[in-house]
Length: 454
Image (tube, rainbow, N blue to C red; front, side, top):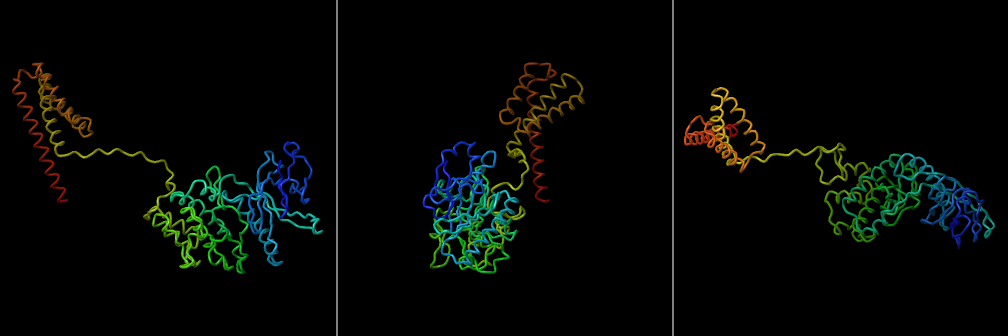
């Protein structure tokens, strides 16, 4: 197994121990030391750094395993490693800041699911044989988030779509609102500090630069990433929630355009020139531009304000498509709507109804010899035929086929017409059809006239 030495500037930090490949040995082996500098490798007799993840001006992060957990849980070990040219005052200030980070992480990591949890915080004092003096190192152990940072995602998949940007805003802005409500400013938001877990959730990483608003009246310690920090942060002045919003906006335009931040900022005009690089929804572009304003008081003052501008309440008109439906109820089935009947369809239906009604009445009267029963049954059948037409169960050729079949039955079965001549049957059916057409046309005319008056 490879175990990484955490002493800063160790010439050969990688150490190989074949015996640690056995899990039983790994769980019980006593302390191991760096073969180059003598630095203890199993931190707090528990955490074994196996890979260097990142380094910065104030620390280094290592992927480690926790041998005191049943499944040898992976975690991140962060070590405070200030640069050697810091003054004693700046060094002490940095130590306080790192210690403060542990307290902040313990609070917010346990309360929010998109912030890594804090597992441990401790110091180690070890001798340095080269300078014959003891050294003290600060460590914190944090939850390891398995996934890809947005920086890695950009390199692998290319420029982000507008929809993807909206999803990031919807997920990260509530996290920022949460930490800002706690009086915390992240101060180093950038693509490499936002990671997408394998389950799709976005996590906000690297709170090594956090600082309580209450303590920011003094000058800044200068913790920021060049290109992502707004003017007030670069000048060492007080930082605000809008400082994080500025950095988030820079992060998003770099993801949209695929260009580095310094390629999008025009130093001559002191403005961001990103809108010419890509076409986006004007509303989204205006919101990002407001987040990128130089003056902190001219930007949105909270993450919640940005959310409300992006995704207004349902009563307000919205231009941007929501990344997820606001109503989580199951969608209602779409009801089918029958197309309206044309005038010719109405008249053809009326002719069919009148013609068919006459044939039915003649046949029924021939069978029952009772005019009341005949009219009642004929009316019921006629209403059924009209209902079928309104539902379009009967249309087009049905209006020809059904009367033809009915007429053929009466023609070939004489007793169904009570010895009435076939010519008379035809005349009665045609007259009934014409009357039905006339009544329908008159009713439609009266209906349109009344509708125009009312």
